[in-house]
Length: 237
Image 1 (cartoon, rainbow, N blue to C red):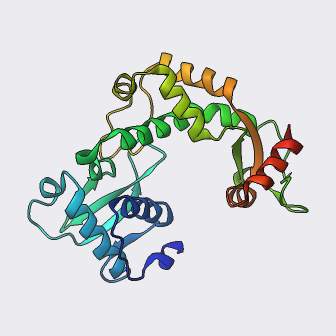
Image 2: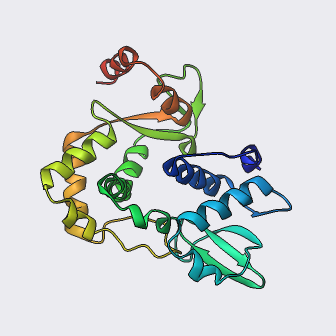
């Protein structure tokens, strides 16, 4: 299991880094997490959920947690954490970890996530234009299947497009009201207003240039310096 690499001494002082790490564990785990198999991760999860999650006391009701389970949320394609307490399994979602610090920066992260959900059909359509196996333009000689490619935003990165759209709308409160109120079982973040979805899709399509890369190539691009990125942009124009 990939999660084994995380089972080491964990000491994050910043809450943000802790939350990012918890999401990484969620992505990598396909099993239960307990004292008997991943003690460091288990203790880490108990510590952060107990410290930061707004519903921890209501979920546990004073009982110790035996293990965490990662399972697909009901009716969703995403995975969520569940607490096992005795014979009871209780869902506990990620959103509760940051409810008490729901500031502008956090709200923008939720908007970005909703925007990514909005353009998923656009990204899928773009990927379907290519023949596979696909030869990545910056991974010379290597070919990749459809499940091993990413779509890269160049000229303007995705975050820049989202933030400029938010500024143009000039009403972050109204945008946030149109994001789904996620339950613990629903880890997906999306807009609940069809007009807003279409508005962002139109803005995105008018302000974005897309480039298909392998996942390896995409990671490499984000580690390149600005001169190398300019070269990629010029050859992909």
